[in-house]
Length: 232
Picture 1: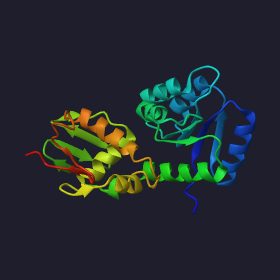
Picture 2: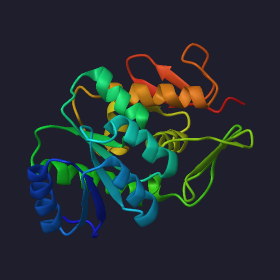
Picture 3: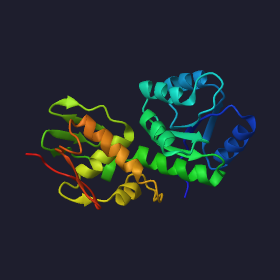
Picture 4: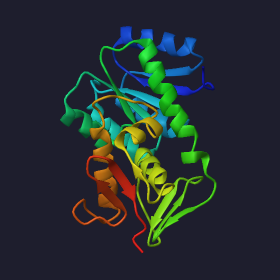
């Protein structure tokens, strides 16, 4: 099923890949804005506000990971990174820099379209499509405005961090497995990639002012998953 038309910024300097991807995305009903340089991409992100960015890391002017960090400093646009890097350390680095998802080369048109649809679906809906504020102790989450505060101070969260936090906060006292988070928040069941969940939980703990050894909100249930707890 096709989602509504999206403006997709394709940042890729290989003309053959650009042509093939542009054709596949256009046939799927999207509008494609192809560029070959990171500097041009940054300008379009700020001026044209695309719905999604596909970012190749091997760009001629700026390293793709640096370009990703620069995008994140000015925009919360969803970014799918296209990379030939496959190691866990590389993937964690990309997620840490602000990627919403990634595809490893080579990939098919059907594969990238599935990833695009999943990311756009997450970006266009708030967790549980909730309209009410969620309060857990000093933590206040506004799903509609996608804002979270702790003790009255705003939390600087990535899109994915916010989605994970809101999903857990809606289910205080329930143990949520990593597989459930992958299915419900990522809308994917990628076997062997649940470590992505651990990375995001670790980042959330840091921003909530806690650690795995001394948790306040996020408690790990060994061998099962993680549970949001009201610390009061």
